[in-house]
Image (cartoon, rainbow, N blue to C red):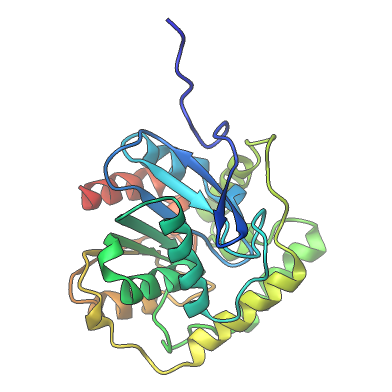
Length: 281
């Protein structure tokens, strides 16, 4: 009997879907069947930037789909300059796969997009995880802070990925988890996608700023069950934004991880993944 290849973060093939004449790259993990869990990633990220421990943790029980939205990583086109348009593209991608209902896991910018998907197409969504993210018009959301700039500059000067500074606390524990996380991101060595271009990163910056500057949305429209998660010291989007989300969403629960930052769900994956899987049941 032939052995069946398990699709995990290291070996799952990179696929393409035609979305209105534009090719989107994506990967699938875990068993098929049931409601798929669609991941929406952060500023500058591609499908190669998801933590393998998180992907494989969810895929042990769930059908997981990661994808690059328009203009990002391996997907064609130009990145929109509003979160609303990004949500439209994500909805079109989900529909192109023939999916009638999905769960969403939105991290950072992906959390903005997830909120818009739920508002635009509520019947498409069953449950939502919002990690390291915030509401439109929220206090400190969309700001390019001195802390953010200094962490990015430190990455440039040390020739290291700034995520190690932006996503983790600067404690001994946080630094150790940052190094482990960066090693995990390098585990996949073949069939990787190209980095997001400077032009499309600039479009994301515009979209993030617009999200932060717009009038707050009425989040009572999002009646779906929502799990909000973050670290206690988020250097990119203030942790108070997670409290704000949890308070304003009518059917939410909140998880805050100690001595963790923007990437708290990666640092604390051993806690986060089981809690999220229980929430998704």
